[in-house]
Image (cartoon, rainbow, N blue to C red):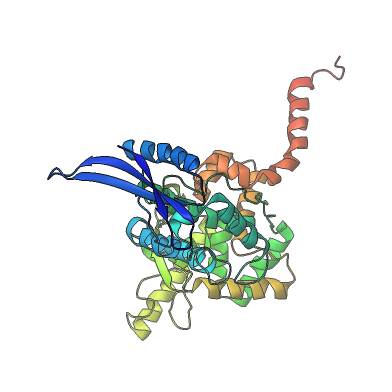
Length: 395
């Protein structure tokens, strides 16, 4: 039968041991669960006994465990996350775990999982929001949210593994998402950029044109091979993403989402540029051997035959834009330029979403809402012409 046992400690204080029956073993030996509490009266201990007994009988009592968050989150990564995610996703998780969650400065990895509570987690989120333990600058709302999502998922797993009864990371206040301003080139700036690339015969010409005319991501551009091109159908298959992990390792993986794996039509001008690049590649292989761009990447450094490293491409592009005095549109921003042109040419949103490889048309709409705002007057004029063109007097 459940009962409270009074214990006298050496320092003269009193503690109480809560004892609850937990059935019998296979050999018939009686099993008990015990829990010692201090700093309470006997009456308070009896109240705790009732709660303790209820947990044991319902099978919800969890034995004390001193495993730290640092130890558990790495076990969770090794067993439940890494085998099922791409190398880049795993690297992104580990970067946030090692830099923030379990970082030496301000991290909470040293705390036992069972001792974590909402106050500790909220305080941790507030601190990294205001000051990154790595750079000392405030972290973006997105980075804070991504870090929180990893922590919450880990602790959800701890609940499933019966390390803790409840997830202390629920109902935490997070910074509001701040929508990043999307910068695009004007058509005049695009003309300056494309003419510069053509006149200087830059090895940036093809990567820039692929991103600008087809809305491809940087990793998709760099992952393209000549074998992906169908010259007869005038299409190209997007199924490879060449990116850098947080540890600076270059990896190849499938594009971001299922919808990102797609076949897109190629403008005739771009098709001719790819054909010229392929002819140049074959001639270089005859001269230097099959190891020259042996994987057949469409975008490669002509002098070496090596494929572009993502960061090197970005750096060279950034310097070029600065030297030309253009709006500081990132390489990824070329994709936004593509979307902007499509929208202003009244191409259907669903079609634009498919071309961009977005997960849904609603995501495309949310991303480019600001580019649609100036279409309000266009719609008004259309309605005026369609509904009221026969009459100049209404009402």
